Amino acid sequence: MTVTPAARPVVDFWFDPACPWAWMTSRWMDEVSRVRDVDVRWHVMSLSVLNEKRDLPEHYRALMDDAWAPVRTIVAAARDHGDQVIKPLYDAMGTRRHPGGRTDTAQIVAESLAEVGLPAELAAVGATDEVDALLRESHEEAMALVGDEVGTPVVAIDGVGFFGPVITPAPTGDDAGRLFDGLALVTSVPGFYELKRTRTAGPQF
Image: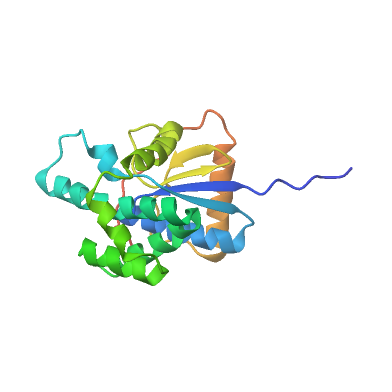
Protein backbone atom coordinates (compact mmCIF):
# COMPACT_ATOMS: atom_id res chain seq x y z
CA MET A 1 0.00 0.00 0.00
CA THR A 2 1.37 3.42 -0.95
CA VAL A 3 0.96 6.17 1.62
CA THR A 4 0.59 9.65 0.15
CA PRO A 5 2.53 12.25 2.15
CA ALA A 6 0.43 14.88 3.87
CA ALA A 7 0.19 18.18 2.03
CA ARG A 8 2.41 20.96 3.31
CA PRO A 9 0.37 22.82 5.95
CA VAL A 10 -0.47 26.47 5.25
CA VAL A 11 -0.25 28.58 8.38
CA ASP A 12 -1.83 32.04 8.44
CA PHE A 13 -0.62 34.22 11.28
CA TRP A 14 -2.36 37.47 12.24
CA PHE A 15 -0.58 39.88 14.58
CA ASP A 16 -0.66 43.40 15.92
CA PRO A 17 2.91 44.70 16.32
CA ALA A 18 1.93 46.33 19.62
CA CYS A 19 1.09 43.01 21.31
CA PRO A 20 3.86 41.31 23.33
CA TRP A 21 1.99 38.00 23.37
CA ALA A 22 1.71 37.97 19.59
CA TRP A 23 5.45 38.63 19.52
CA MET A 24 6.11 35.57 21.68
CA THR A 25 3.96 33.39 19.44
CA SER A 26 5.62 34.74 16.32
CA ARG A 27 9.03 33.72 17.70
CA TRP A 28 7.64 30.22 18.18
CA MET A 29 6.32 30.24 14.62
CA ASP A 30 9.76 31.21 13.35
CA GLU A 31 11.11 28.15 15.14
CA VAL A 32 8.33 25.98 13.71
CA SER A 33 9.42 27.08 10.24
CA ARG A 34 12.85 25.67 11.00
CA VAL A 35 11.72 22.28 12.28
CA ARG A 36 8.57 21.60 10.23
CA ASP A 37 7.80 21.90 6.52
CA VAL A 38 5.17 24.64 6.64
CA ASP A 39 4.15 27.59 4.50
CA VAL A 40 3.64 30.60 6.82
CA ARG A 41 1.76 33.65 5.60
CA TRP A 42 1.82 36.81 7.75
CA HIS A 43 -1.11 39.20 8.12
CA VAL A 44 -2.04 42.18 10.26
CA MET A 45 -4.93 42.49 12.64
CA SER A 46 -5.53 45.48 14.85
CA LEU A 47 -6.22 45.78 18.56
CA SER A 48 -7.17 49.39 17.84
CA VAL A 49 -9.92 48.22 15.47
CA LEU A 50 -10.98 45.48 17.86
CA ASN A 51 -11.36 47.93 20.76
CA GLU A 52 -12.46 51.13 19.01
CA LYS A 53 -16.09 50.95 20.21
CA ARG A 54 -15.36 49.57 23.66
CA ASP A 55 -15.33 51.45 26.95
CA LEU A 56 -11.69 51.16 28.03
CA PRO A 57 -9.65 52.48 30.95
CA GLU A 58 -7.88 55.72 30.04
CA HIS A 59 -4.38 54.21 30.01
CA TYR A 60 -5.45 51.34 27.73
CA ARG A 61 -7.27 53.71 25.39
CA ALA A 62 -4.01 55.65 25.07
CA LEU A 63 -2.21 52.44 24.13
CA MET A 64 -4.85 51.69 21.50
CA ASP A 65 -4.54 55.20 20.05
CA ASP A 66 -0.77 54.73 19.80
CA ALA A 67 -1.15 51.29 18.19
CA TRP A 68 -2.72 52.61 14.96
CA ALA A 69 0.49 53.95 13.42
CA PRO A 70 2.62 50.77 13.31
CA VAL A 71 -0.07 48.55 11.86
CA ARG A 72 -1.13 51.17 9.31
CA THR A 73 2.51 51.53 8.26
CA ILE A 74 2.83 47.79 7.68
CA VAL A 75 -0.37 47.75 5.62
CA ALA A 76 0.84 50.67 3.52
CA ALA A 77 4.20 48.99 2.99
CA ALA A 78 2.53 45.77 1.85
CA ARG A 79 0.22 47.70 -0.46
CA ASP A 80 3.11 49.48 -2.14
CA HIS A 81 5.86 46.86 -1.99
CA GLY A 82 4.17 43.47 -1.64
CA ASP A 83 3.30 41.10 1.18
CA GLN A 84 6.91 39.93 1.44
CA VAL A 85 7.76 43.06 3.44
CA ILE A 86 5.23 42.33 6.20
CA LYS A 87 7.35 39.91 8.22
CA PRO A 88 10.69 41.77 8.09
CA LEU A 89 8.97 45.04 9.00
CA TYR A 90 7.17 43.33 11.88
CA ASP A 91 10.44 41.82 13.06
CA ALA A 92 12.15 45.21 12.98
CA MET A 93 9.35 46.92 14.91
CA GLY A 94 8.84 44.10 17.36
CA THR A 95 12.51 43.68 18.23
CA ARG A 96 12.67 47.32 19.25
CA ARG A 97 9.37 47.35 21.14
CA HIS A 98 9.34 44.01 22.93
CA PRO A 99 12.80 42.67 23.84
CA GLY A 100 14.09 46.22 23.30
CA GLY A 101 11.55 47.66 25.74
CA ARG A 102 11.00 50.85 23.76
CA THR A 103 7.76 52.85 23.54
CA ASP A 104 8.82 55.72 21.22
CA THR A 105 6.52 54.56 18.46
CA ALA A 106 7.32 57.20 15.84
CA GLN A 107 11.05 56.52 16.11
CA ILE A 108 10.49 52.76 16.10
CA VAL A 109 8.51 53.03 12.87
CA ALA A 110 11.09 55.29 11.24
CA GLU A 111 14.03 53.07 12.19
CA SER A 112 12.20 49.92 11.12
CA LEU A 113 11.39 51.30 7.68
CA ALA A 114 15.04 52.23 7.24
CA GLU A 115 16.22 48.80 8.39
CA VAL A 116 14.02 47.04 5.84
CA GLY A 117 14.95 49.49 3.10
CA LEU A 118 11.50 51.01 2.69
CA PRO A 119 10.68 54.68 2.01
CA ALA A 120 10.53 56.87 5.10
CA GLU A 121 7.39 58.51 3.68
CA LEU A 122 5.37 55.41 4.58
CA ALA A 123 5.44 56.50 8.22
CA ALA A 124 3.14 59.42 7.40
CA VAL A 125 0.34 56.97 6.59
CA GLY A 126 0.26 56.01 10.26
CA ALA A 127 -1.47 59.26 11.18
CA THR A 128 -4.17 58.94 8.49
CA ASP A 129 -6.99 56.58 7.57
CA GLU A 130 -5.59 56.09 4.07
CA VAL A 131 -5.18 52.31 4.40
CA ASP A 132 -7.85 51.64 7.01
CA ALA A 133 -10.09 49.81 4.53
CA LEU A 134 -7.26 47.37 3.80
CA LEU A 135 -6.43 47.11 7.50
CA ARG A 136 -10.02 46.33 8.42
CA GLU A 137 -10.26 43.77 5.62
CA SER A 138 -7.24 41.88 6.94
CA HIS A 139 -8.48 42.20 10.52
CA GLU A 140 -11.91 40.86 9.61
CA GLU A 141 -10.39 37.83 7.89
CA ALA A 142 -9.01 36.83 11.29
CA MET A 143 -12.23 37.65 13.13
CA ALA A 144 -14.24 35.56 10.67
CA LEU A 145 -12.23 32.54 11.79
CA VAL A 146 -12.34 33.05 15.55
CA GLY A 147 -15.01 35.64 16.47
CA ASP A 148 -14.45 39.04 18.07
CA GLU A 149 -14.14 37.91 21.71
CA VAL A 150 -10.42 37.24 21.37
CA GLY A 151 -7.29 39.24 20.67
CA THR A 152 -3.99 38.73 18.91
CA PRO A 153 -2.41 36.50 17.70
CA VAL A 154 -4.73 34.44 15.56
CA VAL A 155 -3.16 31.35 14.02
CA ALA A 156 -4.89 29.26 11.36
CA ILE A 157 -3.71 25.95 9.95
CA ASP A 158 -5.21 25.12 6.58
CA GLY A 159 -8.03 27.58 7.21
CA VAL A 160 -8.98 26.51 10.75
CA GLY A 161 -8.09 29.27 13.19
CA PHE A 162 -7.71 29.85 16.92
CA PHE A 163 -6.67 32.70 19.15
CA GLY A 164 -3.19 31.83 20.36
CA PRO A 165 -1.32 29.84 21.37
CA VAL A 166 -0.35 32.19 24.19
CA ILE A 167 3.08 31.04 25.35
CA THR A 168 6.12 32.16 27.30
CA PRO A 169 8.92 31.59 26.74
CA ALA A 170 8.70 30.65 23.06
CA PRO A 171 9.47 26.93 22.64
CA THR A 172 12.44 26.00 20.49
CA GLY A 173 13.63 22.95 18.59
CA ASP A 174 11.65 19.76 19.05
CA ASP A 175 9.45 21.43 21.67
CA ALA A 176 8.32 23.99 19.09
CA GLY A 177 7.58 21.25 16.59
CA ARG A 178 5.59 19.18 19.06
CA LEU A 179 3.46 22.16 20.04
CA PHE A 180 2.73 22.78 16.37
CA ASP A 181 1.82 19.12 15.87
CA GLY A 182 -0.61 19.41 18.77
CA LEU A 183 -2.21 22.54 17.38
CA ALA A 184 -2.50 20.92 13.98
CA LEU A 185 -4.26 17.96 15.60
CA VAL A 186 -6.69 20.28 17.39
CA THR A 187 -7.59 21.99 14.12
CA SER A 188 -8.60 18.61 12.71
CA VAL A 189 -11.36 18.20 15.33
CA PRO A 190 -14.41 20.12 14.04
CA GLY A 191 -16.05 20.61 17.43
CA PHE A 192 -12.99 21.73 19.36
CA TYR A 193 -13.24 25.32 20.56
CA GLU A 194 -11.25 26.21 23.64
CA LEU A 195 -8.55 25.40 26.19
CA LYS A 196 -7.50 28.06 28.69
CA ARG A 197 -5.88 28.68 32.05
CA THR A 198 -4.94 31.81 33.97
CA ARG A 199 -1.57 33.27 33.00
CA THR A 200 0.90 33.40 35.89
CA ALA A 201 3.90 34.82 33.99
CA GLY A 202 4.51 37.69 31.63
CA PRO A 203 6.26 37.49 28.26
CA GLN A 204 9.82 36.25 28.64
CA PHE A 205 11.63 37.74 25.67
